[in-house]
Length: 116
Image (cartoon, rainbow, N blue to C red; front, side, top):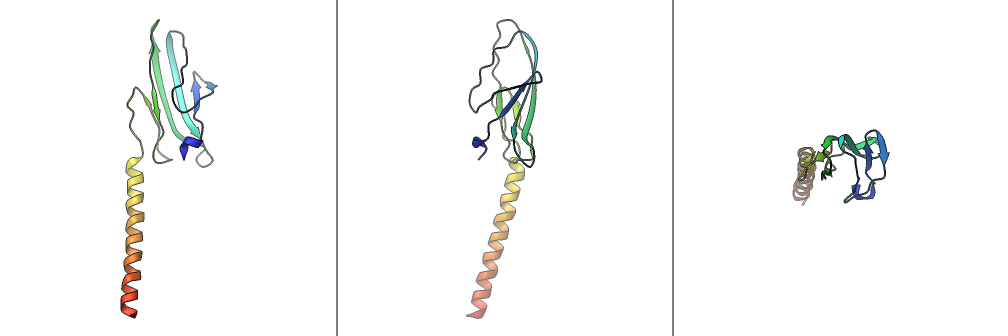
């Protein structure tokens, strides 16, 4: 679902056009601050993540952004590979929902057997 949302890239306080996949951004040597998030309604930003990098002359640096699995978790930004943040929350919610569904089906089965 998040693939339909274009990531927002803010480099040194300036918004840039971003897209999923590789974004090549030529930079001069020095310190650079990178912020990435996904714009949304509630919350306004999904997966905000920040990273500061020092570039030497002629240096190239690859950074990976990974959106979180759970919308209220932070994203991950830095050298690859980056983790999927929010997995624990999502697994917990799925276990609770699955347990509730199993309990509901059990109650329906018990009720059907007691009536029959």
